[in-house]
Length: 270
Length: 270
Image (cartoon, rainbow over all chains, first blue to last red; front, side):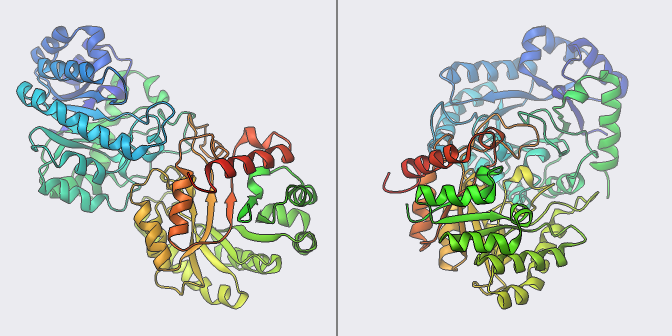
């Protein structure tokens, strides 16, 4: 259980102090935080709250969205916030195609260039950028980075302590090349973040909020955990689930189910 | 315009005789048919109708769904129907995971084995099987074959005149390896079917019925057409769009828009 971390997106409506108290009660030592929740509660106040509770901030979500005109300022702000929270990792979701564009190659190339310009600032702040590939159903409107290979290729020009990747089972489970790419990510020392969620169908309209707690769907979660372990990753494992039905339930109850799903479907031998 | 073919799924509720008459009126010489529509009108009757109108049946959709207990009988029936219609190509959608299964590797391997058992029957009938990769958002419940590379690898053990692949822009546009795989498909003489539809967001619930007529979305359709041409494919180009809003409109109107979209976004130089 030492590696378990609750990503705040799983219990989206749980107020920050309740989330922190709930984690402490459950013996959870890591949390992944989201910028909007942190900003709402206050960056310094959030930092003090988690620090005083003895929690580690395993990642901050999220920077990226490089097709927005404000990406440069916005991402430096995100890096500052990660540093203030003591989060070693800032997850980057690249954003989709610019309005009216059909040029996905250009959008992907721009993501690489944009990340490069952030590297000195991130290194200075001691924050590692984690490029997250999202499921191809988000390629046009949320994230043009769709596979782990693409994320690793985008990270390759930069030092591994500055730029890594985020591996999320929900986004990558369908890809039969993911296993060799996880091994490569290990060799290249790029695994900065590991998140688990399960795949459920039918997908809801908009396809954002249909994920499942670990064990409720069809993803080989333990195989992923064993693969990142075999690649040399020994860091936190975040449960990150976006789902309306999960969000509608009490935080303590969801956390207990996330822990049980983690124990039965992610941790330990198969 | 000679290569344009109207896939029946685009005008789903257009009765068979109206569809055929509408194609003749519009100067369209090819149609892609669907088994349920053909069965409803009658296989022999449909065959006579299209033959007498001088239309070519460019493909029959669809066989596959190899996780169903009835797949063997069902696919032989589909081959028989394709032969009766004079359709040289039967499109195969593989089906998803068996109920309760998390073993996508096994499901993919089973698809390959199942197709192999159909090869002699298909050769005998003079029908070519076309393995269609579907978008990864369908991997669990509709098609475990998610990339063109997977489809080509599954086809590889069998003669190219028995087993090819279907290339559908809607399913493959996000994949940056698709261009090299289209070239490979050409070299290996596997391109059996080429279908175009455009990608739109937000996706509707269930994600099946949110496709766009050519030119309404973000796919580089002409790049695909040029790539299959460069790979040596000179066959029909089907417009195949599943969308509730398209289905609700008169067939003639939809066909006219499909033709205009094809002319402006698929055919000719860019």
